[in-house]
Length: 272
Image (cartoon, rainbow, N blue to C red; front, top):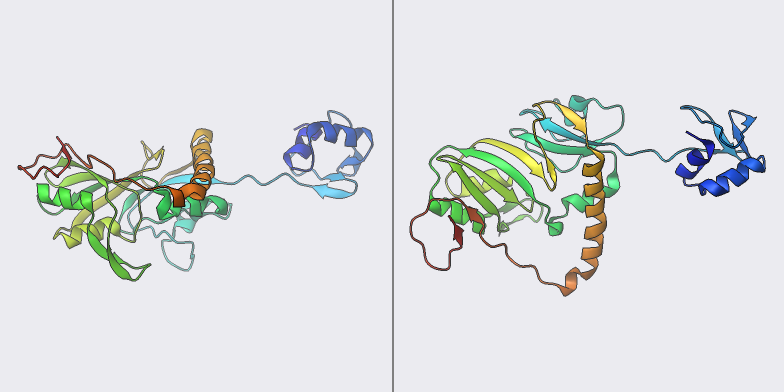
């Protein structure tokens, strides 16, 4: 990397100003005066006016196809914790959680500034899951799930109704569900409240990021486009939160998709 780019990337000054500093003999690379166009290699020491200049550390953004049994915690005293499982050289932590008994997409990062923006319930970021239950899914089950189910919220320490969500019946005992909130074991608790048990649960999407064909137990770095989508979302939600008190949220329509149902009253919004 050229010396002016290196100094600029550190946030010290612009490239033009960096060139001026080089011409004024105020810049050294490994103790030697730099020249216009000098190259900086990894582990080189760059000083401006005797003060070391370092590039801003790039954050890490990963996606993991979490296997069943891996625990979404940074506590390395816990057996099967996600940090040890990934084994990344940087200090990373999961964005949110995925139950030990569940599998699928989970994001990890070293960027603490983005975590709260993604996890805040009021930001209503979609998360999509494939679920199989222990018995035949009825039209009533789909309706109740889509409109919200009363479960215990451990954070607020009280029972409350979950937010409306989108649900799509895939088979006799399987469905896809899209949530905009993330209460602890929410889908399992919702199903249990309606007399069902979850047999398998897999998360396939978080916002714009899809699990795709990533093999179980494998992880990869997010693409530039995927990272940009996260950072743009962070900026967008900050702007929206400023005007949130002056707006009113609307309930999503057609929350049940491709569900075979018996006749219901006219107030039920079902897309067949």
